[in-house]
Structures are given as structure tokens and as C-alpha cells.
Image: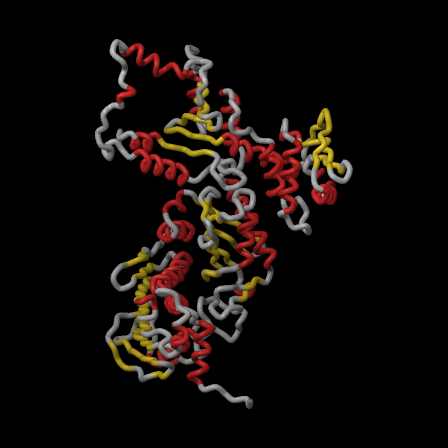
Amino acid sequence: MTIRRLPDSLVGRIAAGEVIERPGAAVKELVENAIDARARRIDVTVTGGGRTGIVVVDDGIGMTPEELRLAVERHATSKLASDDLLNIETLGFRGEALPSIGAVSRLSLTSRPLAAESAWTLSVEGGATGRAEPAAHPPGTRIEVRDLFYATPARLKFLKTARTEFGHAVDAVKRLALAHPEIAFSVGDGSRGVVRTAAHQEDLFAARLDRLGEIVGRDFVENAVPVRAERDGVALSGYAGLPTLNRGNALMNFLFVNGRPVRDKLFGAAVRAAYQDFLARDRHPIVALFLELSARDVDVNVHPTKAEVRFRDSGLVRGLIVSALKHALAEAGHRASTTVGQAALGTARIRFGTPRDRPFMAPDAHHIPRHGTGFEQSAAAFQSPLETGADTAFAPSAPPGAAEPAEEGGSQRDYPLGAARGQVHETYILSQTGDGIVIVDQHAAHERLVYERIKKDLSNAGVARQMLLLPEVVELPDDDVALLGSRAEEISELGLSVDPFGSDAVVVRETPAVLGEVNAASLVRDLVDGLRDLDDTLALRECLADVCSTMACHGSVRAGRRLSVEEMNALLREMETTPHSGQCNHGRPTYIELKLSDIERLFGRR
């Protein structure tokens, strides 16, 4: 077969296949063009999932008739001030978007420069360009795409449903809207608006938070911590959600590099590393980070759709993201997301309804006092389960009849997590705050506290040990004994002394002092299970979260243990001074806070 030059029409379709993979990609390219044209308002309409029509209208600088003709030619662009491809400061620069779209659709461009008296329009159909003609249009540009991929019918077979494709287009606009809060955006399908944001002109950092509230939701705004860091000319800013506000996928991880939304593997790995102490492996946080660095230190020309970038110093960027996120989460202290309490209230409303929702119910005959039983006897029968010594799930704060220390209780309520008032089912601590109540999972909370102590000891002088009075022999399979033996020195650094005891057992001589009284056999078996899930090439210090989490679980207060008021208050006070105590090591909340006003609504008082 001889070598031949492909016709221009076929070359355009091949380029379109690389750049315009689906209608959402076309929307992204057109909106980026509008942003580069310094638009302050961009309206997008997508019909038929983008196959029927796409319309993008902006109020940017517009184009002259000559520029219209150049805009639909391949490799023609206004976005490169020079021929230096290492200094890209705009969103789109390849010069292929409009000609690629025109090669596979019916494309029309109508534009009017700000100072021009009239507008001009130009049509492209299947790669064939028409003549520019006068038109009526306000300053700015309108681009209309009809019958996308009509010239390449095979591509239509690979598109999803109209609803799915519309969702991809909306997502593309949302990401660009997050990067540019100074621009107003709207997205609709011709009959209804899906996205509508206002232009925010305040401080950029505050404007980004307002835009995040419009796109991501108010829950994120209420439960996000600010992120700011700078190192060696690379600036990072944005917001990170509290670990208890998480999702089952990473779609809510947003990274913007010099105003360009990107999907980068390095970013995903950095976010996972920063949150590994707080989230289970199958949960993902909500994060929006904005990275600013010299255009020469990042290559945006490594992917046809400009969705990926390559950093000159990827180690610097990754380290900056990890350290900045960890610092921001530490600053959050013991906070847990407000959505936890809202979910609890929602469950209560669904299960019980409100008084006005419930029909009137006659008293149950089984609960009507017998004849001859007066009010006093009924009250006594009602109170009897709470008498001292009764087998009840509620542990009173003080014995009946004892005077409650009002002053001490009042001062305790001034703390963020309030004063302990009781223990429910010997698992949950009930605390009273100045304006509500707090319910604490005692095991999850103490597990986090123990975990943070182990980490602190490791970073300082090492984990303090306690020698067992009688060394404990733990029987294990041969391969488990060999696994522990290969990691014995590293395990010893964590305060646990484990030595082989024959071929099918190990002997435990020391355990971390912070764990207190611990079941050594159970701890060793769980530790073996954790080690099997880890990469053999990684040191245990690099897998700190997995190993220490296992140890902390064994050293924490178990559910079912009755605590005194002093122990409960001590646990609350330590939570308030310990970073990340609002969630356990798996990302679950350690406490739920309910405001008094919310409780009153449940009972119809509001």
C-alpha cells in the first residue's frame, strides 16, 4: 500500500475524534473560548443531550469578519502571544476546537466586537466553510452547533443516553464555573435551567467559597476548612471538607491549575494520602483546590482535551498538597460535619413524623391504669426502672437523691462538647451543651484519641512500652509467624515486642503503654491480617494509618463498658483538645450534635 496524503475533510474528522469525544467535550471547548474572550456572562443551552443542538452565548470581546474566517481554520488561534508552547496562559490554545466541531456538525458563529456597529455570521457544514454575512447581534459571540456527529454516524453509536450526555455537559460547565467565580453561568436544556450562578466580585478567596456553595452545595460551605500554602513559587488555596462529609466516589475532588480544571492522578494520590488517617478506603472527601504556578512549570499540552497536565516538579506539588490538607484538617480540631446531626434529625422525622402529621391515637388499653390505681402509684411504676440498682440501659449521672453539682455542671456546659449527663446503652455518652445536646460514641471517640497518642509518641521519643507480667503465647499458622518475624524490628518501634516461639507460635512480651490492658492474642491476629493487606515493599511507618489504627482499636474503651461521670467528662475534654477527634479512624463521626431548636421542632414546639 502506497503512502498518500489524506483529504482535508478526513483530516478534520480525525482531529474531531481526538478533541470532541462527546457533546460535553464540545461544550467545554466552547465555554473555554468564551472565558478566554473575557466574557462576564456565559449562557449554555444543550438539547437532545448535545446531539440535537448546543448553543453558547457570551458577552466577550467578539470577533471581526476576518477573525471569524480564521477561527474555523485548523491551528489558527489568538491564544498564543508568541510561538512559545512552554508559556501557555489561556485555557484553549490548540486551535483545533472550532474546525474540529465544524468538521462533524453544522456550525454557525455570530459575533460582534465591542466597538463594532454590527455583527457578522459564518457557517460551517461538514467542514465546508461558507461566507461571512452581516447579522444582528449584541456585543459578544453566539456559537450554535446542530446535528453533532452527523458527518461521522459511527460516533453516534457510542454515545450514551441524552440524559447521560447532558449530565457530562453540565459537569464540564460546573468545573469551569468553579474556576471562574467572577463570571455568571447558566446551563439549560431549552425548557428548564439546571445551573444558574451569579458573578461574584468580592475577594477571590471568598468568591470561590460562594461559588462552591452554588455548585457543590451549602453543606460543603458549612463543613469546609480553608486551605492556604505556598512553597518555592507554587501557591495553593481552596477548601477541604471535613472527613465526616464524604462520598462513595472521587467525583467531588476538584483541582484547578492556573484556572484550568484538570483530572490528575498525582492529585488523587495526594488527597488520599492526606485523608488516609480519617477515611475508610472506599470513601472519598470533598475537596476543591486551586494551584497557581508559573506557566513554564506546568505542561498543559499532554492531552488532546487538555484534561491532564504534567508538572516540572511533581514531588513539590504533591508534598505541598498533602501538607496543606493535613494542616487544614488539624486546624479543624474536633469538628464533625453538621450533616451528621441533620441526618439524625431527618431519620427521626421520617420514623416518627411530627405531631401534626400523626393522627390522633387513643391510649393503648394495656397502658391504662387499673381501677383503684391512683396517679401516685402510676408515677411510681413509671419511675421504678430508674431506681438505683435496676437493670437499665441508662446510667444516671448521680445517685437518686444526691445533690447535683450545679456550678460544676454549668461550667462544663460552657465547653464545646458540654457536660456529661448520662450513658445510654453503656455505649453512648449523652452530654448537655449551652444550646443543645451531644451524643458521643465512646468507643469510636476513644479509638481516635489513642490513635493520635500513638502517632505523637512515634514522632517524638518513641512509643512507651509496658512489660507483661506473664508473656503471652499466641498460636499462629507458619506463614503468619514468618510474616511477623520479617517485620519484628519495625513492629518493635511501635511498642509491641513479638518474638517467634517455635514454628507455629509467637510470644508477646511487651505492648504499647498507651493501650493499657489489652488482649495481646487478639491484637496480634488483627495485626497479621492488616500486614497481609499492605505492600511488602513499604515500611510500617509509611503504613502508619493501617497499623496504628488496628492497635488503637484494641486500646480503646469498648462499647458496653459503664463509665463514671468523671470518666465521661474527661473523655469529652480530651476530645476537644485532640485534632481530628470528630471522626474515628474510618471516617465515621464520633459524636452527633443536636441544637435545642431542632429538638423543639421534633416535638412541635416550633
